[in-house]
Each structure stands twice: as structure tokens, then as C-alpha cells.
Image 1 (cartoon, rainbow, N blue to C red):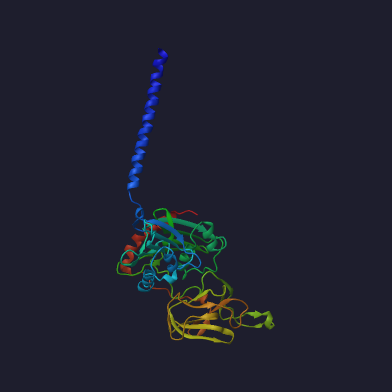
Image 2: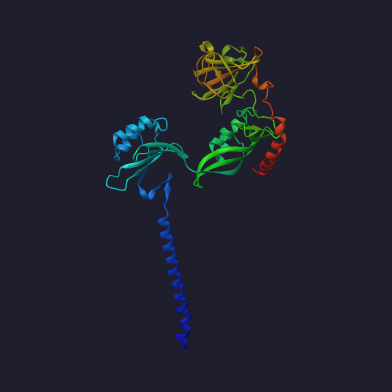
Length: 410
């Protein structure tokens, strides 16, 4: 009798546990039913209404070929290709880009919607139902603030790779400090810190670097802060300023090409073995770079010469004002003509080996008051600092960012 009584709690517990499991199963079933009843969306469309095929553009694929294979009439295809080419140029679908077909759930399986992803964020929708329409849209993007730092061992790009940072970070930093840091002369031990924002799709899929909010770059022991600041709501673009509200931009870029190296400096006492060590002054600075590398105008100005001549090969000369001129030699090809106004950073040609040259490079020559000089020894003018009326607001704006930068460790 005692044994039977002793078993009762065990049986009761077992029965209760089983009831809990059944209750859990019931709750799970209800939850599953709720989930099934909740529509899921892709590119803003209820996926329960279509049979969806996802694929990527392959070599030889065309917009017409893809849609024709999925039951879309040639008239519709022609309408999209001609009437909506400003919104979607069907000839510019790139191999490897994703697309999706939203097909009808009937025996025709005809495509009703075609979605092509231009980028990871932006896409175009071709709606083939009833009257045809085409529109561009973008996925919901969330911007997440992050921090990063690094110490240069050999190059900035290699350091970025070692720190698992976006390669675009190098480009962003080089643009910010293009006027103040010579990226061809970085030294082991130079270091950086950044506060930046990264784009995320659906909170989890990274869409890459968005922007740098604040940066610190230490070059040759000299600290250089940079803060992205927009003076007022009426100003169209923001700019980078240092901790004393000086604009980091200068009248001239440090170099006419990105991520290259100086292969020969300005040297009026140069002697070359090939010429019997005779005095052969070099009045330019050579930047070695692969053939086809874009050559940039180092400052705003008007093209005064664009021609091919003798040892210069293909070259471009720009007058910036009454004081300064620059010249770019040995181009593979020129992109500007005499009389054109060019902006700082605009591509004016491409690195080549025309004229007297032993390898691919651009010879960068710099004139001041009609005399060729070494650009790296000039006290070049800076852009105007932030107007005094914004000084207090600026200091208040950068204070937490500067503290954040200072607290980042390497």
C-alpha cells in the first residue's frame, strides 16, 4: 500500500510534466499559426501572393531574355526598355547583380514583378501588372556608430586589412587629410583613430562604410584631429576642421595621384650616370603609379596647355591664379582641353609612359610666380577657417567627439 501511495506523487509529476509539454506544444502551434497568418514582405511586396525566383545576372543574360523566358509579352518588354529608360536602363544590368522574379501563382507562372538590385541598398522595381510602371527604391538602412584604430606598419591599406576595416576607410581618410598628410611618406608608427558610421540592412547585413564623423591621425609625431561639421542648415555640405576650427582643406592637394610613391624628388643638383654624371636638374616630383592610374588636378584652375610634345609626352598645364601653375607630364591620355575650368580632385588624365621616361609615373611640376619650385617646401595657402560666429557651437559640437577619440585605444 505504501508503495502505491509513494508512486502517486511520481505519477502526478509525470502527468503534470506531460501536461506542460502538451501546453507548450499547443502554445507553439498557436504561435506557428500566428506566424503563418502574418505576411512577410520582400521589396515591399507580400511574398505569399507570388512564387518568387531569386537569381543573379549571368554572362549573356538580358532583361528581355529573362522576362521572355517567364511568359512576359514582347510588347511589355519593349515598353519598359523604351518608355522607362530614364528610370531603368535595361542595357546596364551588370553580371553578378541579384534580381528577383515575382511570378503569378497560376498555371501561366508569368512574371508580374521584376526587381533588380543596383547596389546592396538601391533597387529598381518593374511592375508588369495591368499598366506597366517602373520605380526606384531602397531598402531600409540603419546607421550604426563604430570606432576603430590602427598603427601603420607598412601602408595604410594593409593596416586597414589587418584591422578588418573597409578598404573604403583608406580612401575616406586620404580624402580628409589629402591637404595635410603626404600619404606617400607614411612612417611605421604613424597611427589613426576614427569614429564612423556603418550602414546596415535589416539590422544585420552590412552595406559598408557610410561616413567618418571624427578622426585622429598622428603623422611623424604630429597629432591631427578632424571633425565633420556643418556650419548651419543652409550650408549644403559639411567640411572637416581641426580642434581649433581651422579648415583642413588647402589650396593644393599634396599629390596628383592617390596611394602612389615618390620615385624622384625635385632636385636641382641631380646627376645621372647615363649622362656621364653631368648636372641634370630635376624640376619636378615623380609619382610612380601603374599605367592608367587617374591623375588629379591638385587645385581649381583653368587648363592652359593640353598637348603632346617632346620629352614631356602627353601633358596638361593648369593656371590656378596669378601666382601658381601646375603641370602633369608623361600621361597615357589627356582628359581635358585648353580653356576648360577644372576643380580640385578632378581627373585630368591617366598615368602613362609617353615622352622621356623609364617607367610609368606622372612628373608633377609646380610654378610660383613663373618659377619652378619644390611644392613640398612651399607654405601653401589654407582655406578660410570657420567663421567666428560658429566658434562656440563648434567647440560644443566637437567636445564629446574629441573625448571619444582620446579614449579609443590601439
